[in-house]
Every structure is written in C-alpha cells, then in structure tokens.
Image 1 (cartoon, rainbow, N blue to C red):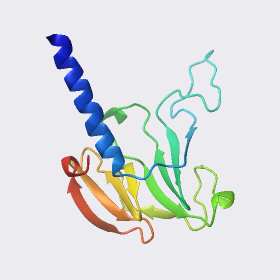
Image 2: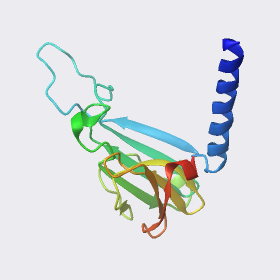
Image 3: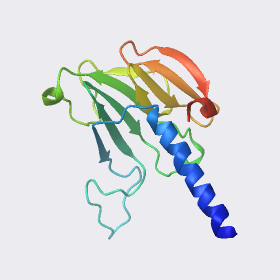
Length: 160
C-alpha cells in the first residue's frame, strides 16, 4: 500500500512539474561562472579558479535573441541571514546567436538591470518571471524584458 501511495505522489509531482514547465520558454543555453571565494582561503588549502567553494556565481540563461544574467554573491546557500535573492539581475538583447554576449561579471553595453533581487524562474515571450527574494514575500514578479519594467505580480501558486 505504501508503494502505491508513493508512486501516486511521485507521478503527481512529475505531472505538476511538467505543467509548470509547459508555461515557460526553455533556455537554449545556460552558463555558470563560479566566482572566487568571499573569504580568504586557509593557509595550506589550494583554491582552483572556477571551483565551487561557495555559492558566489554568475548564471546566464540564453534565450532566442536575449540573455538573462543573475549575479549571486552569497557565500552560503542561506546567505547567512542576508537577502537570499540575486545581487543583480539584468537582461540583454542581441541580434543573433553569433553575437551572443559572454557570461561575465561586468556590465555589457546595452545590458538593462532589473529593479529586483529575486531569481529567474522562467520566461515566456517578452515576460520574465522572477521569484521574489524570501524577505519580500512568496510571490512572482513579472517584468517586460524589452523595457525592464515590472508589469505584474502573481502568487507563486498561480504560476507554478
């Protein structure tokens, strides 16, 4: 009996996830660049650039003719009590896949910072769906990727 209930729960979760994923465009490519540690490396311990020693990273999500960049500067998964959202979120349009920008820390000409500190959960057409940072609530902010302006807000349960 336990196995049947477990199977039903697993199938239900998979179906819910599949429904949520149907709402969003799939990134053509994802890149992640690990940043050097925030705190000094203890004596005798080696640091290899790019090694994931903490949660400081740049994540870039490439869609058809635009990129969403998320910079996370937290040193731990829970950010040690600091805001858990991204340090900076931005979007950049580009002409074609041959001219797509590198995933880098510095701002790229034409890159538009979004006035939020959440995390990208998906994109659909010209809309970006960004999870609010935990200290802001349990909602999803919707931004227009071309203007960078917030165009809506939904509860997490309405989107996912």
